[in-house]
Image (tube, rainbow, N blue to C red; front, side, top):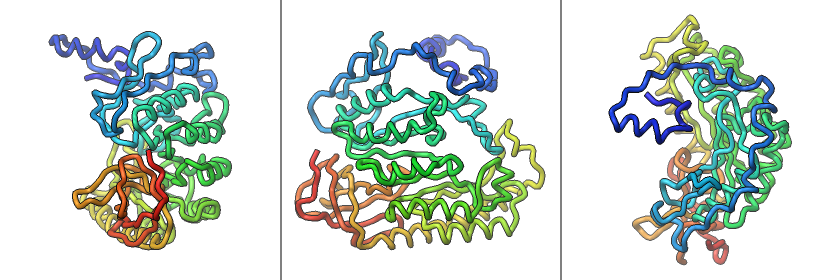
Length: 392
């Protein structure tokens, strides 16, 4: 079995597999112990930043939906491929960090991903330019915890500095941030996300529950009142901001009172997207050894109950957007001659979509100003405003 420790020699490891050579089984270990205790010391100071490397090659002329074989890879100074697009489309992820330093009792990610390590800004900006040259119009910043970005580089507010630079990348229409920790969401970061042109006012907040008692057992921050106060701060700066979150039900010891707290929070929060997941043990985690486990049938029942509530609340939230003016990034033309894309509050693959009706012709990558005229579940229907299209 290959592990994350094999990434640096993945080619050789795959050659071994193809040649039929047996490799020793991977031994799990806490990779955090391989790094210095001080986060600022985790990256070598003499590492060559991307702004000293040759500029990534521009893509050949063509549609941003061309197959990936027509997009030039990002090749480093030593000739190695840093990244190759495996799919077309106008939206692409951009990894800003890996690993996690948090100790949530239910999560095994730190044990195999290792400690939190940020990529340096010049490298991220260079990759953003390469993606833009290859037809990408929206960047989705990904990591295990984006609110921690920069802390291992000695600057906990580095994301506030990098976001405007990413949004100013020629060809990029929108930058979206995924996976924000409520416990680390600073007022300055809220303001930058809510008010920076080109940055989607979109908050992917990992609440996980709303009962303070359950959250303490999860080794997490917050409760219903604190989370509602946080959402109020966000919407004071950006009333139309999109918010999504995931929740775990069936955690060991979860009571009817805890579920009531979660239900009250969901009913008041006005979330655009809600993911409901049932608790299950992860090997090596603290929660796996907790008492008062619920049987799988009860966990499944709670998932079904809250998934139904989530669908109802998301549909209500979508309907509440009727009459709003939204910016839709067009992704494709539908079979009936309309266009499908995503507004600022809709992340790709995990949230709803917006169908845009227009008398004109649009193309993938166009940013269209539209007014919401209808909804279908979490999805929106909108009419393009005449003459308000930013063509690619």
